[in-house]
Every structure is written in structure tokens, then in C-alpha cells.
Length: 153
Length: 168
Image (tube, rainbow over all chains, first blue to last red; front, side, top):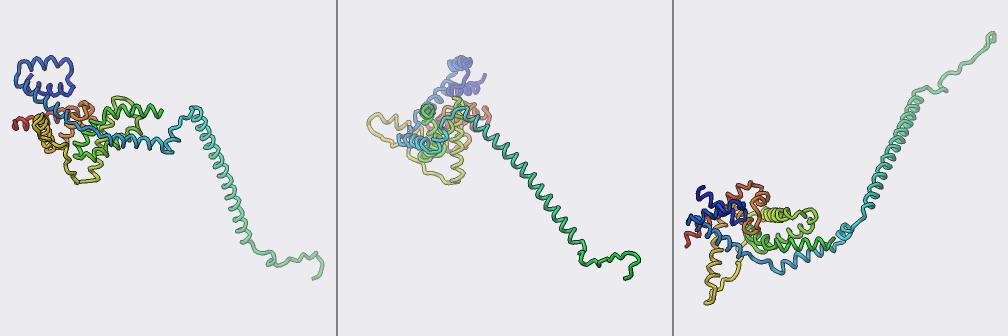
């Protein structure tokens, strides 16, 4: 393995990602290679400096986060939604919803039948009226006198 | 149940507040914005805690959400750049602060170099150094391969080492 490969192992080791079995290999190489040893020291120092210089979160920020959470917990909707309900209640509610849906489907079905009946009767009435309007009036038909035979007019 | 959620949240909050805050400062270059976005992330975390209870997923969730929020902010603000905030006052005195001054200088140099690099490269570095996430987790957050994560980290560290070596 070349020094470049060991350099990658140095980074993996400092990142806590180097498998345990490779650590021995790395340190054996570092014992004999001054360049890689220097690389290890420099990268280790760099990593430590960056870690040390992390800013702390202010108390004001913490207060802000926890105040927001408290106000969210106290909101009306949250109080209702977060209430524990027993399991049987959910099953009952589900059953009621299913029955309500079935009933409404039946109602819709019977309503449709009523509508169809109404439509049929309406069309029949219209046809009757149309037929009657095409028939001549009986008063216009000349009266036919039935005269018995042998009788003089 | 509410109490349990609050306890879980507090534990997670205490573990990630510093790494998240520092990561956001590096990405957003503004302490104020970093606070706002970190606040939003923690509030969302609290609301969704039941769904992300698996311990190994919390880190990924937190940093993915933070990243999305930060990039959402960038999209809104477009090219507005915040003035760099001053991290701390450098006090030079006859006491022990020469080391402290050198340290602050070193960090300033590191930050300047990181700003010059491509955002994709520096972001991997920030995620690794400030959040302590594993390569696999960083690859999931950034939607890149693990090999690419390692490669970018390697390049960033080599560049930083080159710059620092020149200064010495």
C-alpha cells in the first residue's frame, strides 16, 4: 500500500470510520513513515481546533424553543387531538360511519327509482296530451242521422 | 404521553443543539438566521417525534430538514448576502492569550479557505466536522455516494493543509 492509501486511512481513523482491523495496519505504517506521521499530527490538530471553536447555543435561543413548544401544547386543537381515546371507540365510530354510508347509498338508490317513475309518468302524460291534441274535435264531426228503413225523410 | 415526548425531545435537543447550530452558522454565514432555522427545525422535530423515534434516523432527519430549510431560505433571499458576524472579540493581553490569538487566526484562515471552495465540498466538511455524522449518513442527506463524500472530504482537508503549511 502506498502512502496515499494510508493518508485516506488517517482521515477515516480521525473520523471514527476506520474498521478496527485496519487500525493496527495504519499504526504500524505510521511508526515507520515520518511523512505520514506528520500528516497524522497536522490533520489531528486541525480537527481538534475546529471542534474546540464551536459556538454555544444561547440561553435565549433555548427559551425560545421551549416556549414555542409549550404554546403549541396549549393550543386548543392540540388538546383535542392529543386526547387518548379507547380502541373500542374507534371501532364503534368506524362501524357507525360504514352504516351511515350504506344507508345513504340505499336512500340514493330509492331516490333514483322515484325519479325514474316520475320521469316515466311525466313522459306518458305528455304523450297523452300530444295524442289528444292531434285528434279532431267531436263537435266538428257532422252528426249522422240514423233513419230506419222505409221511413220518409 | 406529552411528558414522555417532552423528555425524549429534550434529550435529542441537548445532543444536537450545538452541532446543528454550528453547521447552520457555517452554511448561512449568520448567527441570527442560524438561530431562526434551528428553532424551526426543533419545533418540527417536536411535532414529528412520534414518527421519527428510531434513534439512528433522528440525526439524518434533523440535518436533512435543516439543510432543506437553509436552501429554502436561499431560494427566497436569492443573492442577499449577510455580513459576516464577528465571532468573538480577540483580546490581546500580556496574559495567556497569545495562544488563543493564534487559534482564532487559524480558525479564521480555515473559514476563509472554506468559503472559497465550492459549496458542495465545504458542506460535506461542515456536516462531518460540526455534526459528527457518519459518511453513510452524509451521503443520504446530500444524496450522493459514500465514495464521493470521502473524496470531497479528502480534497478539502488536503487544501486546508496546503494553505496552513504555506503560512507556517
